[in-house]
Length: 209
Picture 1 (cartoon, rainbow, N blue to C red):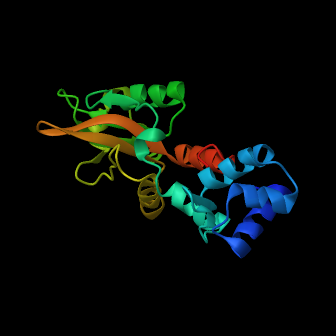
Picture 2: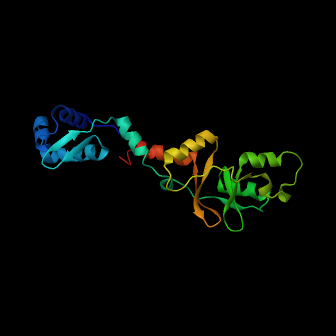
Picture 3: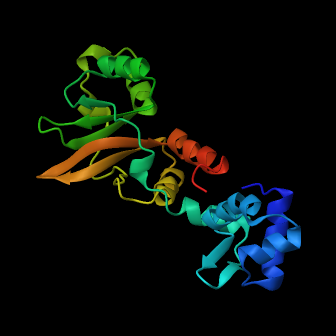
C-alpha cells in the first residue's frame, strides 16, 4: 500500500508520541479533526495504526511488507478458485483434447459414474497419447490419466499460500478443489497459477487492505 505524504507524517507523529488522540495529531499538522479522519481510518484499517477508546492511536510496529504477508496468509482457496472442467473416465482422448481447447484450460479432471475424482489429465498426457499412429478416438482417458492416489488436491478452506506451494513443489499447472463425499471426493473447483496471480494483483491494488 502506497501512503501519501500526510499519512507518512501521521505515522511518524504516532510513532513519536503515541498513544495520541486524533485531535492532538490534527493540531500538530494544523488540520481539523474532520480533515484527518479519512487518513486515520485508512491507516487503521490497513493495520499501520490501532486505536483504543479514550486512549488514542498507537503504532502497531508493522511494516508494509509484514502487512502484505499477513493479508496474503488469510486468503482461502474458495475465494479464488475457478469452475472445474470435468470429463468422464470413458471419454476418448480425442474428445478430451477437444474439451481442453474449447474450454481453454491445461488440465482436465476425470470422474467416474458417481462423479467422484479418479484422475487428472494434463496436456502432457494427451501429447504422449498422440505420439505415433494411435487412434485417439479409441483410447479412453482412464488409460492415459494420472490416477488417484497420485493426485495432489486441495480443499476450499485451505490457505491459498499452501495451495500455491503445492503447485510449485509438484510442478503442475492446476489443483482439483475437492470436498469429501461418500466413497470418494467431489470436485468443486480448480486452482491454477492464474488464480494465484489474480490474488496477488488484487492484493497489490489494495482491495484487501
